[in-house]
Image 1 (cartoon, rainbow, N blue to C red):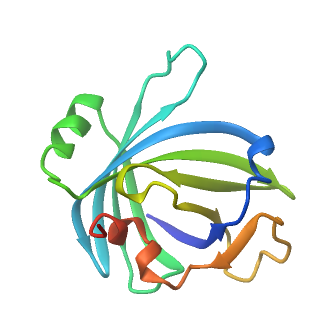
Image 2 (image 1 turned 30 degrees about the horizontal axis):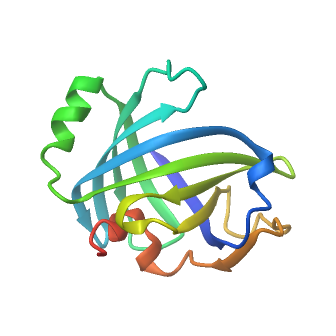
Image 3 (image 1 turned 135 degrees about the horizontal axis):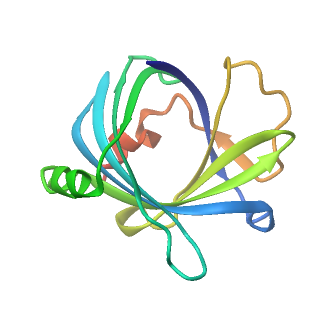
Length: 159
């Protein structure tokens, strides 16, 4: 088990785009999506010029009532199992492109949502503790760490 501590922000502008080091297509399906727990399947594919990347698949369980810190259990699973599990999620799915951007020695994950959340862009940073980040990129907007709407497990319910 790992303790996940992360902060989330809306993104303002495109200043981050020239700094992207990698991008992934992420498909997520929630088998359980409740206030204090979630079970999700994630299929993550590195975006390459030739489209040759093999998808990586994970089963992840998160537990915790606080917005900033959760207990996280994550396991790699076969692609066929991931696809089968996704079929059990019904409409509790989302799709996004995740861009990795380095800023002052830390990797920011910038999620550009697709489908019904098209236009939503959220940046998140994992950290050792909530206060360990003191400098922020200029392209960050409002912090939404404590706004439950911006949790992926909540977004699957939003229309």
